[in-house]
Figure 1 (tube, rainbow, N blue to C red):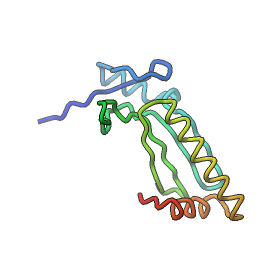
Figure 2 (figure 1 turned 90 degrees about the horizontal axis):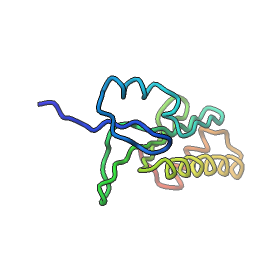
Figure 3 (figure 1 turned 90 degrees about the vertical axis):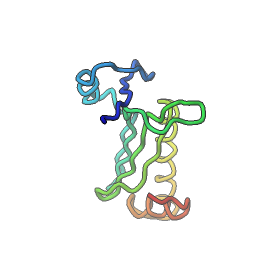
Length: 124
């Protein structure tokens, strides 16, 4: 039995159901998928639209956006969001937290992210 997931694209910043897997695949290859990309030293913070339903909240809204923090080429943490605005704000918060830790502790980006993870008790 094949599981049928709802596929989404974006109309501006709003998710809309996409009936064709072919159209969805093509759309997912476009830059419109990205909310933000920030590169600091050897840390990449990438926030993007997932395009597939993930873990609905209590109100039945799907988690459709994700931020990945990649340090030295390894996924070090991820955050998920329901809306574009939440994802954009979350991205900026993560970037700010990393830069703040780098400045306060005098660390390069990857060790600073490890410090953030340790201080915030983040586990991948």
